[in-house]
Length: 277
Image (tube, rainbow, N blue to C red; front, top):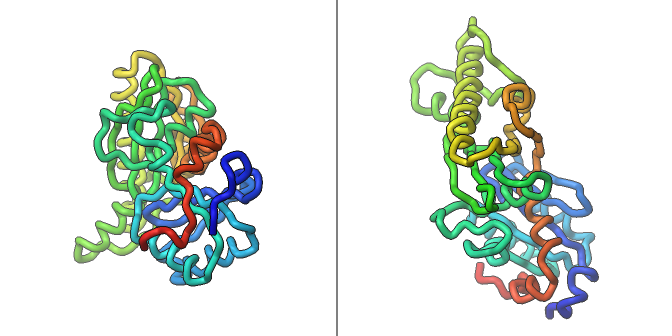
């Protein structure tokens, strides 16, 4: 399958943004988001590929922190002989890219860069993004628009999983879906309260510490699948601009594609059947 000309391929195809996180795949087109958890849905590759089947030659813009899951999905699309075009966001946004340069931060995940880019769509720098997923990442964008790095620690679900796995008597408990700070009268309540407080406290300490290094009060943008329980508390606590955008990585992907001329994107687009899987 060939690739349409530079000025026509975006206009003539459906653009699909694919965010492969540690826990789930999120697909977005026409501003609708569809989520496919890996562990809760053993047939997630089939269900996700079936959702794409009605689309005519979609262009899949892919951001991933889990190469194995990405390969599983693309292999399923190839097995079904789907006509897709693929573009990796890491190719569009190398470390020296002018939108969010990050050449001074080694090994940073593309999801963190895209989150900053998504936040940049709504706020002027400096800014801090907080992404609550399997891991919690705190990411900084300087007043000059340069990524400075940040911090990473275990999210609520991962903390609870580790406690259940590496202790003899602590039970398996689902991550809190609402704000939970209480004197736990049961082991489950104590686990939820302690985990919520550890994540919230870690976020607040890191934001406060990092904000001093930015030279101005940064906007704080909260995102991620595990962010909802912390949104109200953080909004009340933070004295600067604050926003809760659950799909900030997808918004960053869309913003990047909108800002780049088609002729700059086209060299990085390739047919699915040309990929080495």
